[in-house]
Each structure stands twice: as C-alpha cells, then as structure tokens.
Length: 108
Length: 124
Image (cartoon, rainbow over all chains, first blue to last red; front, top):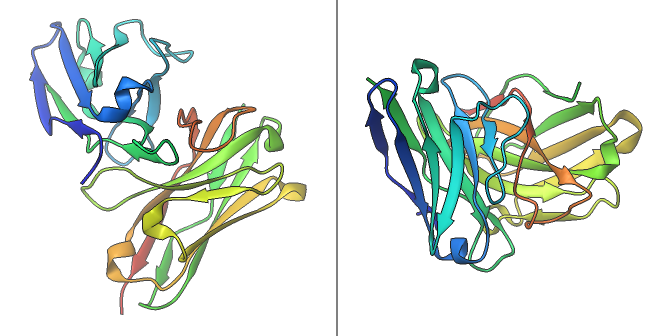
C-alpha cells in the first residue's frame, strides 16, 4: 500500500473544475509533485512545489496544500486532460520517494 | 533539448537479471540525479531509487534493496539500472526520470524529464 492515498477515479464535465487530492502524513512537511500520464506514454510533470507549473503546462492546472492533503485543480477541464494523475513526495521517513496510487480522470 | 533515451524491450527468464540503460543528452549530465520508476501493466508508478551521476551515490527503495544496482558511465552520459533474481512480478515498464538541478537524494522527487520507458517481460 502507498503512503500517499488518491481516489482511484474522478470525473468532470467538459469545461468544469475538478480537484484531485493526495493524502499522506508526509505532506504535512513536504510538497507534492503532480504528473499526468496518458495511455502508452511516459508521465509528464504538471505541478511542483507550492504551485509551480513547468514551461508548456496550461495555467488551468494549479496546486495547493492543506494539512496532510495536496490538491491538483484543473479549472475548465478539456477533453485532452483525460488521463491518469499521480502525486509523489518523500515518504514519512524522508529517506525515500513515494507515489500515490493514481487517479483516473474522465472528462464527460 | 533535454532527452532521456532508454534501451529496448527485454524478455528474461525467472531468476535472470536485466540491465536497462538511460542515455541523457541536452544538459549537463552530472548536475542532475537520475531516478528509476516502474509500472506494471494497468498499475501505478513505483519508485525504485536514485543515482547521482556526479559521485555515483545511490539510494534504493527498501523493496529493491539487495536486488537493484544503479551505475553510470559519465563518458557517454548513461545511467544503468540492473535488477536481479527476476520473477513474473517484475514484468513492467521501467522509466528513468531526471531530478532537479544540483539536488541529490530522496528530497529531489520532482521529475521533470522522463525516458520513453522500457518493457521488461519475465516469462519462462
């Protein structure tokens, strides 16, 4: 089992806002990074740190954190946002990296 | 442009070892850790460990301790991941991924560039 917990599946209507969450004790200390993965492709970094987007990531993607929960928000979801989303961070010992189990986002 | 290019698919028998390579280009090789992450079919991402190409330091997930070895050849900007005593549970796509600049170890868990993945199939 992962030290970071994500909902297995989330859906959103086209153009609406969706929040994908990641829970874990280590998130009280460390930020989460977020990755988007489409079928047959490598993951792509979409959010890191407090709320930073790599170059080329649309500004509809944003991140936040409160207590033991990190959140990825997509404001105005597009069809191309349909994908699996993973969070990662350090584990509770601080010595290892851990990924959440992933959330499958469906855009209706 | 930054690229991580991995070696091709492998088929191995149970008990064997596999070595996957990750060749970096487009940046200063020794300035960024390389991490390895695997993904079984239909499953999530699983972190295996990191290597600092500068000094050769490594850190492995407890699950793979004693079975995984990460090495590098700085002359050809390539990192290798070798996994031994393979079982069917090791059938997965293996990715290399770059960590942040001048940051080493598990604190550097933001992976900004990924290789294309290498499918390793373990079957008798």
